[in-house]
Length: 351
Ligand code: NAD
Ligand code: TYD
Image (cartoon, rainbow, N blue to C red):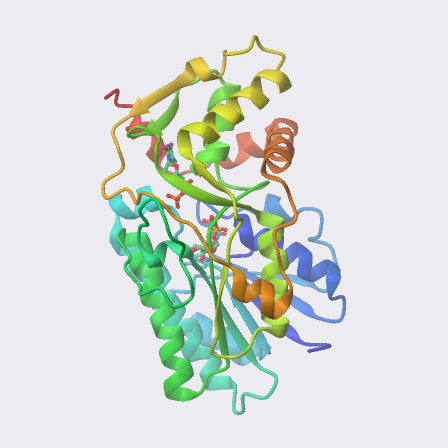
């Protein structure tokens, strides 16, 4: 795909900004178009270090705006699409499901339709849809999600992502669209909006505010360093088999409460606070409605087919992440100063 025009949607968000950065640096012959609406979760500060690169362009657009999206595809004739734009936070989806259906379902259909219209032949074209392991539902104490696990989404967020995954596959079967998909576990690292568990906890501990832990903190997530996800996305975009789905995970399961305690220890050390100071901020709050108990991914297929595996030990990754947020106070202040609902503040209800 040398000299190609690649559209990355949601490139001003958490994972998207890491993907844009990787592609801009690694593929100087590509032109990388970052299309983003810049919702509360998207911020061009996430890309300051590469925004002046000659192979990078930013387009402010809403994927729900069908006419605008069609016009952009006509104008730029993108050769490949890496689609990350989405409403991504489960708690918000519980508060307002419609926004998730609009962006995650209708926005994805608009992109598929626009690509299908301009791609008169599918040679060397590719539509890569990024999804989540949450579409598979909730696991008990044992077992792992594999690519064949039946879909069983439980939250409005995961239901909207499942719906978009089905549509992408339907376009492969019906129109022979050249699609590829991946479903990844929970990401962590720099530039994540501080409403998700890890950056929210870091930010709250820094300000000596309560750290809300939903329910008993026994829910389990499989955590992956975001740069490892970006590396997997690069591999799958270039070498994944059309029509196929690849699971991506960290082989790194943590109970929320254990993760928060590990984070508290790192924070005490980093901030020169007495041991136990951060843990003293832990506040058990009302559980999330329909809270999925456990996610765990089997990524054997990706490992066998493309040789990918996670690179970073979790404690090392967590340490790096804490240091990044503490060193980037300006970023934290800026992204939280915008016009958005501080959803998580509604959660400070002592059980
Ligand atoms: P994010 O919320 O940090 O970023 C989403 C980006 O999409 C933002 O820049 C936002 O401005 C943009 N966006 C939202 N609505 C838009 C619209 N209508 N038009 C154009 N742009 C719009 O999300 P993230 O955590 O980086 O997730 C990116 C993708 O990866 C999502 O599709 C998500 O479902 C998937 N995913 C996320 C995780 C995770 O742990 N965060 C794990 C697996 C999969
Ligand atoms: P989150 O980061 O929102 O990701 P997801 O819901 O997509 O897995 O939440 C990770 C886990 O942490 C999840 O089990 C919910 C829990 N959680 C808390 O206990 N407290 C919080 O303030 C948040 C945001 C999440």
